[in-house]
Amino acid sequence: MSDRPALPAPPPTDDLRALLPAIEPDRQITDWGRSERVEGLLDATLVEFLYHYWFRCEVEGIENVPATGGALLVSNHAGALPPDAAMIAKAIKEEHPRPRPLHLTVEHFFKGYPGLAMLVNKIGGVPAHPANVHRLLCDERQLVLVFPEGRKGTEKLYKDRYRLRRFGRGGFVEAAMRARAPIVPIAVLGAEEAMPIFAHVGLLQRLTKLIYFPITPLFPHFGLLGAAYLPAKFRIRFLEPIPTDGWGERPWDDTGLVQTVAEDVRARIQDELIDLVSHRRSVWLG
Amino acid sequence: MTSNRILVTGLSTFWGGRLAQAVERDPRVETVIGVSPEDPTCELQRTEFVRVGLQHALLRRIVHAAEIDTVIDTRLVVDSLQASPRVAHEANVIGTMNILAACGGAGGTSSPVRKLIFKSSAHYYGCEQDDPAFFTEGMRRPHPPRTRLEADIVEAEKAVEGFAQRNPDVTVTVLRFVNALGPDLRTSHTELLDLPAVPCILGFDPRYQFIHEEDLVGVLRFAAEHDLPGIFNAAGDGVLALSEVASLLGKPPAPILPPWGSSLAAAALRPLGVRVPDEVRRQLRYGRGLDNRKLKAAGYAYGFTSRETVLAYAEAMRARPLRRGEAEPYRYEREVEDFLRWSPSVRRKGTV
Image: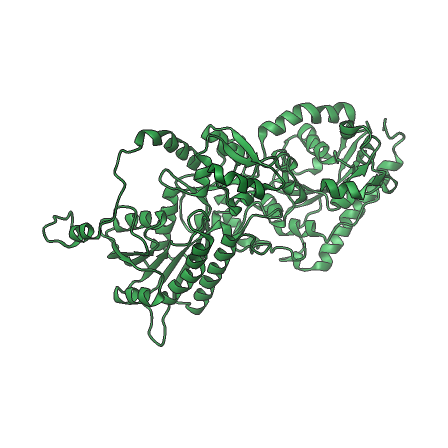
């Protein structure tokens, strides 16, 4: 990630929007590789169970997710196998008056790992490339979820729970500004306890070529059972959208402004998390 | 500017031959000349064939003598099964240099060429883990080329770019084509898709985009009829997953290549007749998608989407055993062609 690829400039894309490929009704897979069938199957079984019965998700501020147009959803990220993305997507599907598909940006690692490479884009994962985010937000006017912490959020140890990591270089703010799409911060409570990490095993990580090889309450000593979550109570709070079109012509050139906005988003999520944790009586019952 | 006097290189290739067939039917085109080192492989009515290698001095004489205004260069080797790496390098790098030299003015003489259309390939972008899902024309490839073929294509395009800068009065169009499919076309991909099952790498379901052979010729002709300076992606609408391609063809996917050590496995499959070149192996792993909107914005309307291309190919494949041996394969005989073109005894339709 030494030099970042240049993004297309916004003005010419305006007229190109009409030229996006038409939807072919016979297809079950989108141009991004998302499969209705696989996603639907997973949604009707595992996600449904986790959302309603295991994590008992409670959602606040769903009206902050715009019903039309592109929007960039920004959330905190936690858990060895992070369940937060699936829960946010399900929350929008269940609670929003106008449910929309959510595209999740994932690390390029997934595209190169056998098995995961097949699965991740079938269920709505999109490689976290600035051009991908721009196309989704600006041209296709979709909802995109990013975790600016990335793997720094998921690999952090249990003792650091609910302490947000660094928000990268603010690339997500830049992407939202270029697409003139609002940023919707999200605070998720519960993911930290669903699959906490106590330690990392560096040697096994290198052998398996995974991003990390964690020790969680159930992994690796219980084998495949280690993929099971602990039944923490989930609370998802959608915060007020931050418009990005009020900063003049080319706000993304102003790195100071980009960093300030990124820091502001981070601070908002961190404040909400502190508020959520302080009001929580029990990790399991909420 | 519309093209009146056209030179097509690589006439013996599928693309060159089909393009010449399409161009010569257009009465507005005065002259079509085709060059290539080998005999043409399809029947041509009025295209004049000159057997010439890639020596720029000879090409230049043809260009000047026939006052060629448009050169369509279809000769680039974009499939490593078509030629050995050495021959491909020769054709792609040295050949491109020679054609550019023949098109440019030299030593004070100005060249009649006003338009150069260069057929390139999406292999220019390569296939990497951290690629964008849709390449646009302005994107540079994120990593240096990994296969010889890619390196050659990148070098050829660089030479064309330099030519465009030195000759601002020449309209230079570079067309980057995705994998083409069609009933008459043989590529390393059609070889794999013709197998009883579609080979893939275990654990990967890459994204694939196709262009129909008719669109391929259509895009080249469109570029000849209109002025399109710059680089254009040419790809059918829609990006398919390889599993989707397999189901459209009605074949099961066969994960015969292991995720690790797939190059060794590909080498082991070679004696069995399954040839998976490096660039195809990378595509089977990471896939590739192109943004085709720039060409659409320029006015070209694709006849086939990626899905329709695969469906058309599936139909053609099913009909192929019935068609076998139906028509004699075309053979070029200079005496016969010359007789048909120039003899006063031949009654020609129309007066072109």
